[in-house]
Length: 551
Image 1 (cartoon, rainbow, N blue to C red):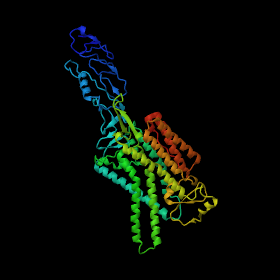
Image 2: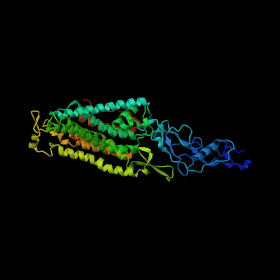
Image 3: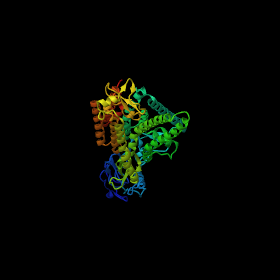
Image 4: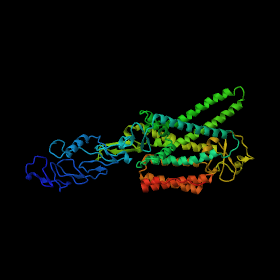
């Protein structure tokens, strides 16, 4: 029998002379038994008769002499020099107090590297399994994916509703969407037929929604990258609303995976759908135009003149061009985000082991996608960056430049008088026009109706400002998507951009309506303040609410 603090190494002792002092890292004040002395607190061993080492890695639980995971952490044993089966057998041996077990008295393999889970409660690690545990509904690398029967909202997995409820929700959403489209189409039709231009209530609503949409499309990217927030209760509803404003409609409202486990919408699928959307919008409008043109030709063949048929076709063309431009404008920021997340820089490198000999590269937006097999997507992302992300604002700027006759840099004073109103009637009898106002009580100028959406709420000298706003949104989306919100450079640059535009708006005041000007400035202030508050106070970021300016 050995005294406290001593033990017989490797079994087989027959007298006290065979006892030796317990190795380093052990508690030598207790009786050892048929093993080396028990480990000190926060120490673990890999040999029943060997020393204990300090558990220095964050996320390790070493209270029972072996290494396991604390809640909120993840590791993966699927690499060459790790053997989780042997380690479990060693733990079983370690827990036995007698000398009956003679095998698996040590573990000679490597341990995996520990990572913090994006969402702490996704990794409870409470079932005693050495490999760790994902909470209900979660699976995959870092427990960041959803199991079948769940769908994702802002990095949280929510159980799918019953099929009946799902169908009713989708029906309600589609009904609202169709109603909005019909209302907007009627609005365009009235503007096309009207000879006079007054800013309607719907014009005001659309203009202010455009400001809010531009803000929340960027904020939606930020919320999606804030992994450490526990989205529960009413925050899930808020997150759903923000994600819908970010136009993640397919995931939020349709939820295809809830209908079938095979309908998985991952970043690869989003990329294919996203880059196809602009082309599909154009093709759909062309088909509608040709079909309606054929219908009008047949309808007015006997009763109307050729000029009448041509006038109706021109009106239809204006309406479809306006609808197409609005849709392209709305879908541009989310499609850019989809393209950016396919960049090689949007991949994150992980290491299975602590010596970094076994790396794996995962897509930041979906850790279950391995980037080594995505070279074709990386190439396509660069191509669509040129032909879409860069080209779209340039095309819009060119269209504005060539179709706005009354911008100050193009007309002199006498020419401006030629495009003014006299007694409420147009001097030039164009049907393909609407009007936009300048900064003061000066004359109105003619603006094509299908471009009016981009500049009607800005002063005449700032006809290009919406393109600058579009570039600002894409730049901030690029930084957040590519580098993540955890990157300090992303925080600095996005905050600087917001401050810069806040100063530009305060200095130039480009908007016609004072309330819209205040609303836009408020959005920049909210964005800047929330970024600073979040970086300094973590979850307290969400305790602050957005207060809009009063009318």
